[in-house]
Length: 64
Image (cartoon, rainbow, N blue to C red; front, side, top):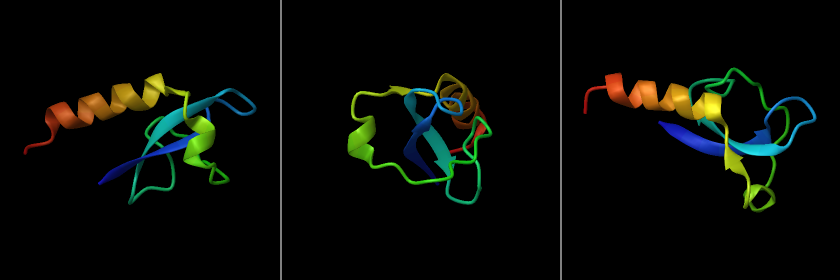
């Protein structure tokens, strides 16, 4: 299972939506989000391109 969470794209960077596996400590792009940011703060944020690329590969290879 995966969830979307808001965090900086890079340390101190703009907020983006990351993909986080519920079983992992890091996002699909490898970041460890140190603090929870309210979803409303990322309302207009774009999606993390690295997370989305990884998620796309996972969904293409995971059997339904």
